[in-house]
Length: 98
Image (cartoon, rainbow, N blue to C red; front, side):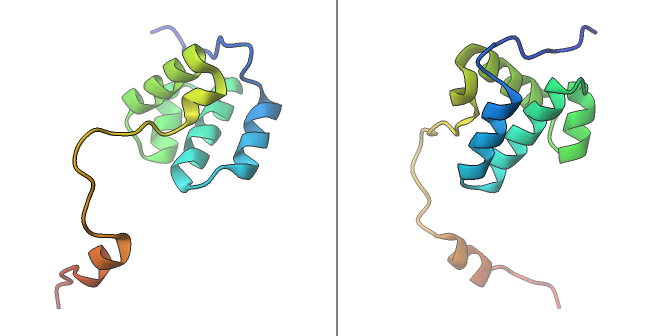
């Protein structure tokens, strides 16, 4: 299988590191780190294993970055009804076996 590469010239190591400094959330950091590793020559399979995500997720990140540049790293809004519970409520109501 042919190795995937970052072909968008607007995506640079410096731009990614600058984005990482101001990026909120862990998932943004994981996506930035994954793209940095791809730029260093890592395979999408190795990146997926390192971050415990599917290879398909990594491929999608690469495709979005190639099409949209650094904006492709941003989380897209998802359709559907938003949750009624916040994170604290989810953990407070978790069932923990004794």
